[in-house]
Length: 77
Image 1 (cartoon, one colour):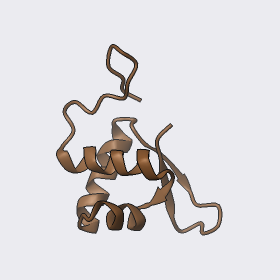
Image 2: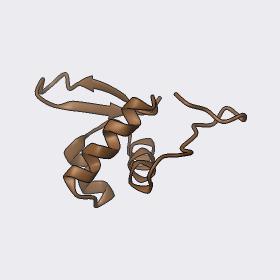
Image 3: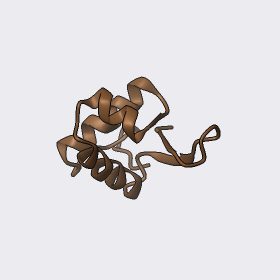
């Protein structure tokens, strides 16, 4: 996960939607994309794009939902 010099997660260079999504996950805990979209009040495609970017940057962890193998769950450690 990218960190600044103080050891905090760095959101530099990320679009505002990705920053919002990261903050929602950080505050709410593990969530799937639909839950994140509803909580952040973002369009589902905007949420998906933000999650893709956050995963690429190593900000979020992605795993398969243990209860529903069709869903992905996003977390921040």
